[in-house]
Length: 117
Length: 111
Image (tube, rainbow over the protein chains, first blue to last red):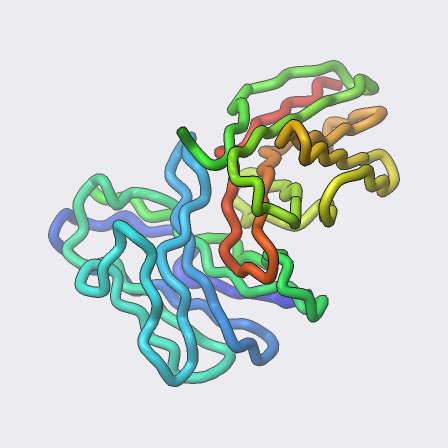
């Protein structure tokens, strides 16, 4: 299993500002995922962060709003830009399971709880 | 229609009860089925994983998949207060890293 550390664990931000969330994994991984978890809603994939290439964004998410960096195989950042109260959510970093199968198994960090006032 | 439907609960049961958690889905291409457990203020952790149809048992937990009905279940026997958490069903298609999650069911087990 992978150990994933996220920072910050929580933050309260003002409307119009930006926040960068960091994700550190204890082993090298090719793919890292960023999810959003809003109250009462499903975990939603924001984007896949690939080392050495641009992140791949899911429908409804754009790079200008959620820029992602992936400087190496153990680290990624997600920035939530120009925040509004609708961005209040838990943001989760995730990596694939290490079973060697492309099965959709995922390991998650503990999440970053963001509140926008 | 959502790809994965899951009753959000909350579900409250007494200690020792058998708990049944369920999800339905619409995409017949899903082959891999998972249950995640998420404690308050923590990230989800993989609890059970099943490939295709059938049952899988792990201690007090049993996962069932009925692909003909597009229906999956998680049973918890002899439920304990420590089982109180949100349970998320999840599934993906063949070779996919695109995992689709249910909204999660909040479970409370009362001592």
